[in-house]
Amino acid sequence: MTDCLFCKIIAGQIQGRFVHEDHELVAIRDINPQAPLHLLIIPRRHISTLNDLGPHDDALVGSMVRAASAIAKEHGYADDGYRTVLNCNSAAGQTVFHIHLHLLAGRGLSWPPG
Ligand code: 5GP
Ligand code: ZN
Image (cartoon, rainbow, N blue to C red; front, side):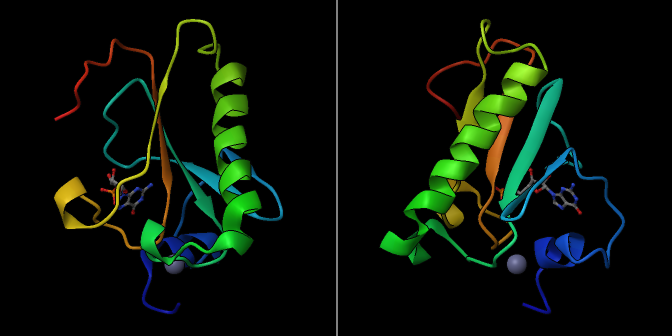
């Protein structure tokens, strides 16, 4: 997608350091962090919202979750705990329409979320 912020970051058209990258995913630091560690785990392939996922994406979504868990562990948050969030559409506050898994860690996170 030419008009997508995350596609541009993944293509290197916008400066940004990847905290993690592999053949199907990248992870970047959120520009407006809500916790000491706030990363976005983003598939390289453009998918606008969770509503656009099909059965052929099951492995990709599994990889996103497993990447979040591995990165949290690398940063020393596996035992204390961390939160992963997937926002879908406006009521949940999705602002970038290329799916991404938030990984938040390093502070107490209240429940229910806002
Ligand atoms: P959403 O609200 O769609 O679930 O999350 C989008 C996230 O992307 C927000 O937390 C926002 O701070 C982050 N974000 C927006 N623009 C940029 C950017 O240019 N670079 C990075 N690294 N994060 C961004
Ligand atoms: Zn995109």
